[in-house]
Length: 122
Image (cartoon, rainbow, N blue to C red; front, side, top):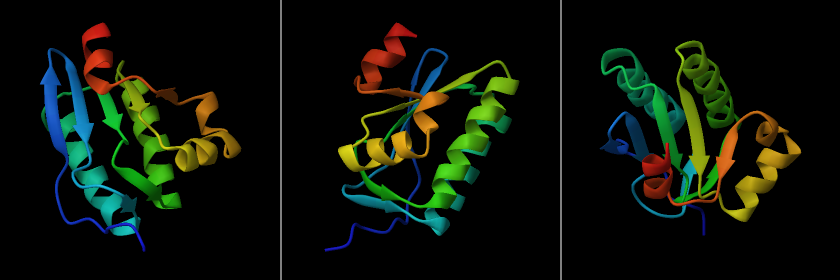
């Protein structure tokens, strides 16, 4: 069975200056169209709301496309340029392996910690 496609918006939680973003649903596939929606929502958080410290919780994500991977790279660079940061947490084994093979884990901050614990610690 293929993972679910998305038609939604990110669930966000604010813990002081840190924004925790979750993908609603379960066993999700972040494809090109959902990657575009995610990018637009994150751009709103960064540009309009001035949120520069983001935690993306991948706990509900089963697979993602190259477009989503590229979006994460651009997001990371944009936040760094603004003096912020991006943490990605709760990757499943398959996605963690993709991050390792593509070397994304060498410059993206990947953690296994629960997002709430990360937000409080930051």
